[in-house]
Length: 427
Ligand SMILES: *[C@@H]1O[C@H](CO)[C@@H](O)[C@H](O)[C@H]1NC(C)=O
Ligand SMILES: *[C@@H]1O[C@H](CO)[C@@H](O)[C@H](O)[C@H]1NC(C)=O
Ligand SMILES: *[C@@H]1O[C@H](CO)[C@@H](O)[C@H](O)[C@H]1NC(C)=O
Image (tube, rainbow, N blue to C red; front, side):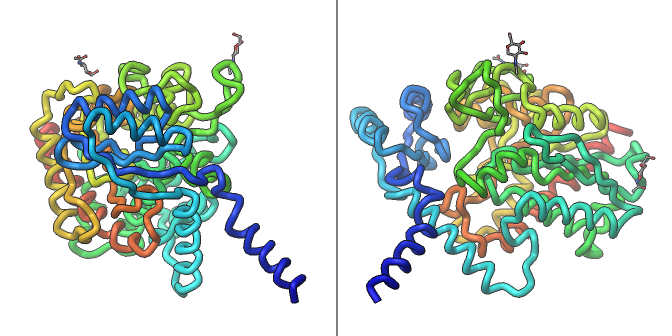
């Protein structure tokens, strides 16, 4: 009996321990940022201590959410206290919360008969198979394109969806991509559900979205990071590129700081081990270079670029250096329409969408996909930060069915408005 118990305990140990141990005793704190200088202090702590800012917060309006290691915790909390910044404990042990998330996923999966790919967190291979199947099922509407291999050799594919095979220049193109940051798992299902609603489950009232708009949908920008976040490190954000000239110790680059726009100037860390390392030079990552190439290939017709991230319920537009674009009023208008319709469906755990220039309300950035697309001429370029429902990156899967529907409504509205603007520009 004793022997049996020992064996049993050993099994439990191997299941629950291990994978997330790197985050044992890491904690997550809500930080009541009051103004820009509090936000600046957080940025400095990120640079100096290496804390991981999960959410930047908005002075006087929204708390920041910050993860710290057990070693960083003391200096971090002291710095907050010294500056009179209130804070509260959000997660006491990140490893434990990641284990709970995995258990949630397992029980969700075992309790469901008809698993929909966009109501779960599908792996790269499943997403790939789904895109292949869609392309084979709708040969007259869909072209599957392989942009090329990721750093580790996974093909980065996107779907072109069009009733006229992209030949009708009077139609605008809506380009969305997801999973640029690996740990932001909720983003890929949103892209997949958009494919589903345009093709497999198109409703009569949405026929115009298919007829009048061409779509480019790229569900996984950073497949290496995404797979790594499944197999090794749930909170991995960056790419997985290895460059021994840059670091012999740490791998990866923040893809959303790697674009050639004010590269390596704002909101970046020079340390290759940090989450916001922008890379050795702009477009050092093949994954971001593919996005650049898609933008240029279809540039005159891409009316809206939607770079999908999580979390916090934000819709951002450029530029990250706080300078507004000449069409900022329209950017804000279309962004607000998108946010408002999503808010009409919001769950009570979610916040309202905030629509703003990210540099003005949160923190300055450089090298972002959103800014790059805007700068080269896409009229409506956004960063969409999906809801976290208080769970950060590890949203329990039972939220997904609702989240993808709600977000699709926002995408549909932004597509229709962008189309009207495009016609005005065109005629
Ligand atoms: C669109 O045209 C391209 C180039 O001729 C072709 O390779 C592709 O299969 C076509 N796609 C559809 C959906 O007809
Ligand atoms: C590393 O540096 C060497 C010498 O400067 C250069 O030849 C090589 O291309 C660099 N490798 C990478 C991956 O940048
Ligand atoms: C901010 O970035 C935009 C786009 O690159 C640029 O046109 C503008 O001059 C920049 N503003 C400042 C203050 O640097």
